Image (cartoon, rainbow, N blue to C red):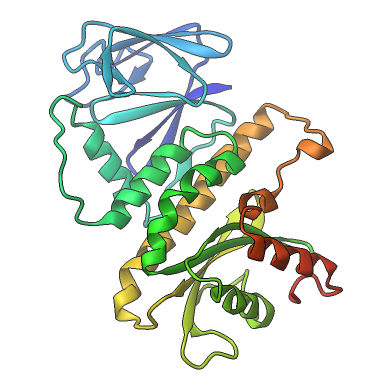
Length: 316
């Protein structure tokens, strides 16, 4: 079923579009009631079509915005969004079960809500004091509009390159005896050997978080790892810092903890959407995690060697 996805009170809310026409507003007789001062009594009309919705501003005080522009009317396709000052709405298709946010993500969503309350004509360019908060905000904003996890990972890989100033990150998943490298953000090729040692020799890597542990066979360097689920599969986000000073890496680790929570949440939303559409992909069209790192010859060779190993789970 089509629904509007939006954030409120620590939950990602889903409002079902189960009528041909609905009204959003502050008044209790509306279909979707949002009791906020920035919402007019009758704010927005929605007409539900087969693959989209048609929205119309009902002469509200604060208006309706699409792609940063105030609009009177607009067509919103699945995966696209509009916002009413302090609340963003994304049109999606899938289950109506709501998600309670991990505590690490609530400040990020509140940050997005705060920025959405500033209309484009009043928002001014400002110095970004915390690049990590901006990254988390951007990743969520992009991910909530995506339906394909592969496409999402490709989109966020480029702006995650800022992490190479601090270290390298690897995202890997496990299914039965196969380890798939989903994402590789690194500055120096030597970290591949460290990554290999971690996958091979750290017990319970996909079950337990690793808090600033020494890299196997390396007396000088450390790593941290954050476990998560991606489409129901066990996964781990591994961080190998350039500088083994724990204090200097604390902000990066806090960011990566929230990033792991985001990836888990967004993959769940995207997976749910794909199930609702009952997509039956041909074998050659099925998503391959390897495609994401195929441009990195060293990583691709690492994957290929792993596939040939008789101990696929832990031997490279």
